[in-house]
Every structure is written in structure tokens, then in C-alpha cells.
Image (tube, rainbow, N blue to C red):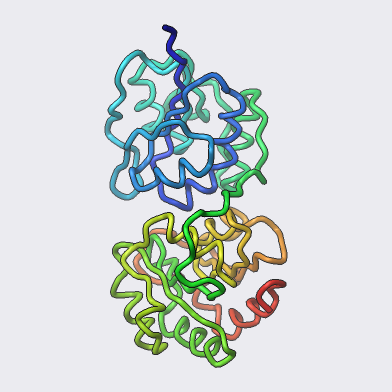
Length: 317
């Protein structure tokens, strides 16, 4: 009995990072159709990895702060191909090199001069970066290939406007009182408004719900399972958030969205240009996407700006 060759992809990051990398994963699936594609990523991404149709198996891998994992629990012969979709190295390069793959695809870095990969451009959009990376290795990639199939699970709030006040760092979190102002205005217009948050954002969600006087049935804190969150987003009237994972999920389901940017401009992480995806950003100096205080650029966005952006959405006006 012959064993399929194995392709190992390292992208041990968060939901938004993962979704931005879906076009690259699908390009690898097409480029290596006979390989078993093993994705090294956090365990909680298993459902979304399966939904892409590109991943055969998830190898659990993560580190605090989305750093490079210290080791990978790889067993058996070395990977036939290893692909670094995690970053530009060298820690991620060294991690994959420790498995002795027959072939390693990675960006060039002075710390690993033996890797003859393409150059890294810091200001490049995340989706475009990884597609260009694969094209440099002769693997055709399409940055627009990022849609996910419609969830089979029913939405817990079909037709609602979803507000998601949290993000990976406080610097990307718009103030709760401004979200509450928007929620109140939308309720007065007759919209159902629901609030979501991650596992560590219960207090943030509770504060918003209290200020906006939302019923408990419209509060989804504590981190919804991916299937339920995906269904909620797919059937939402619109999704409103900062630069975080749920914004990318709205793009993956072609759900109208308004995304607010602060420390990092939309040119690096924003949605594809389309009327259903509105972007709010006030041009200013780059900030720290992992900072502990709301970025000053993000604070320039007012509740009336967000409401105007919602009014511009073709499906939500």
C-alpha cells in the first residue's frame, strides 16, 4: 500500500489571519492535488479549516500572542513539502526546517540565507502577500477565492445587525459607549441588534448590552461555536466591527459589513472593494495593532459616521 505524500502548512494564527489566508490554502490544494494537506493551526480553527475544502487534517499548534509554536507534534517521515504561511521568519522557518522537509517554501530572510524565497513587503495586503508568495514558486493563486459555503446550522438571529465590539487588542476596539449609541439608533429604526464577543470578552459584551438596553436573547458573549457564529454572520443584515476576525467572516459569507480601522490601514487588512463592504478609516500615523489603548485614529470615527456607512450598504439600507 502506498502512502500519500504530505504537505505541511504552518499558519498558527487567529480566525481573521486564517480567513485572509484561505486563497493561498486553496491554491496549495490545487497545486498539490495528490498530497495530504496538513495544516498546523490552533484547534479552534478546525471547523473553519474543514469548511474551506482545502485542508485534509489539522495538526494542533499555537503559541501565546500568536507567536511561532515552539514545536510541532509531527510524526512519521518528514513532510514532502513544508510551507511557511505564518510569517517572514526566521523562527517559523527554523521550526519547519527542524522537521527536515524535502522542500520548504518560505519568504526570504537574512536570518535564513539558505532559503531562496521571494521578498517580504511589510505594507502589502495580507491576501495579496500570500498569493504573490505562491506565484513566485509557480503555484497559481487567486486572491478573490475566499468565500465559504453557506452554513447548514440555522442562524440564532436571522436578519439582525451584528455588533462585535471586541478585537485582538484594545487598540483596535472602538469605545463601547459609541457602539451603544449606534445600537440605540438602529433599534429606533426598527432593526434587531445583536452583540457578539469572544471567550474573553464577556464583560465588554455585557457593558454594551446594558448601555444599549438589549434583551438577553440578543447577547451572544463568551465565544459562539464556529458553526453558530458562521450561521449568525451568514444570515445577518449587516456586521459591524473593528479590524478583527468577524469582519473577515462577513467577507467570506458576502454579508454586508462596516469595518472600522485604526492602528493598521485597510490597505493591509481591509475587505475587497465592493459596495457591500464599507470601510471607515481616518488617515493618520500608523499605530500599534497590539496596543493597550484605543488608537487615536480609530477614535476619530463617530457614531454618525458608522450609521451613515450602514445606510450606504445596498442590502441593508
